[in-house]
Image 1: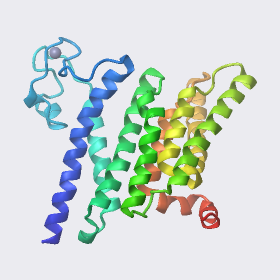
Image 2 (image 1 turned 90 degrees about the vertical axis):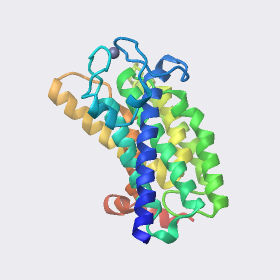
Image 3 (image 1 turned 30 degrees about the horizontal axis):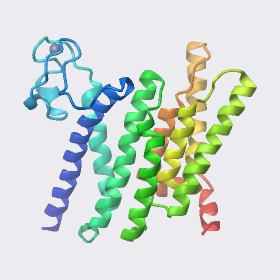
Image 4 (image 1 turned 180 degrees about the horizontal axis):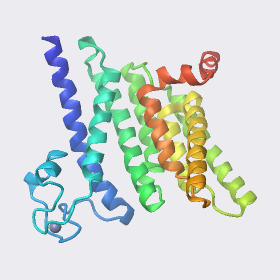
Length: 281
Ligand SMILES: [Zn+2]
């Protein structure tokens, strides 16, 4: 009986995730152009409105065989991929917070909501940054108060599990993360004469800090993120023999989502940061 209940809730998390993923596709398509979110979705090729029954996440793409019902133009496979990824993260987060039937409560639901919001913002930010090389304010600076409020909510709800942090850590993470990246941006510009890091990265790091806290959150994400970004940059250099831009935003997004989902298991394996955590109350 318990198993049926739990799988029902897990299924609910997956379906919610897929539907939110569908909404993220709308944000991804419209935020870079500051377009309104209100009008109905249209086919980018022929402009005809998409019918409500063709808006089912993931499945619509399958039964339309990846083509617009009106003009037959291909639908980008990134649409169902974003929905699938969001559903997967929704499910993994559910597993993270609800281990057994006794864990089902408004508190764990709030934790799921806070970190699901964070991961969704990371998906939108990564996609938009990869495609347009900009980080929207909605998924960086504007989300800082949401992160701090989320920690206030979790604190008063009595949630103490990974990856929640104290309100002080959240504020310190936002300020510290933003400042460190801003310093790197200024330093990079002075040393190289080009804009290696943008203000968008600083605002993004402030947002990550608000959700993950200063220590170990910002510290680990910065360390793992810059290592991974340098690795990708180096491979790109070897492969194409061209100096390239480092997609730092998406790398920080990826590292942050992995941090939220598996950080408590992975960090002690790779970083001696657990010593640091124990040293700091
Ligand atoms: Zn069409």
